[in-house]
Length: 191
Ligand SMILES: Cc1cc2nc3c(=O)[nH]c(=O)nc-3n(C[C@H](O)[C@H](O)[C@H](O)COP(=O)(O)O)c2cc1C
Image (cartoon, rainbow, N blue to C red; front, side):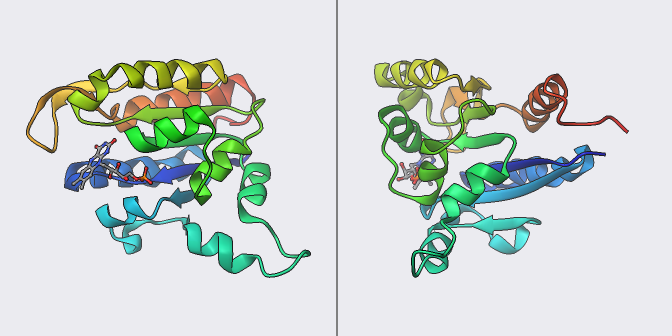
């Protein structure tokens, strides 16, 4: 079985998404995938790093690894190492940053340096009011224009109590899409 390497963005908003995020990372090795997680500092607020069963990278690692010229630059190493990237959940803030090219943390640097010949999937997740703001559709179109694949959000009761569009796609939907793309590109051998 070939190993597909896949950094998944680690983040979650509220206990339900933490469990769903765990499902996403936890199910990936079953597909023969070698997974690493890149987290933002804000996202750390929503889960316990001990619950992440794979290597977890954050901004501290980026800066601690590099001291002088011959040292590795983590965001470049990760963009080389990975065959596919999933940004799940993609919040409104990071969506806006990616759409406009901002790269001020490890996650956005990996995305900015991403080899666009390789697949990048993004799974938006935000409050319905944020989702309905016109800038969101513009940002999503921008990302699709870069060649990235949207795994659309769904309507349901959100963690904040509102009901409507904005919830992250189900984990099985994301995994199905990942598997489909990896098979298309011959990166995943079915056992
Ligand atoms: C409890 C709580 C839940 C949040 N949920 C979301 C969310 O589901 N989607 C979103 O876009 N922003 C959400 N936010 C706002 C983000 O956390 C905020 O924009 C943050 O700066 C994102 O940082 P990051 O993109 O670096 O991870 C939430 C904030 C809080 C305090």
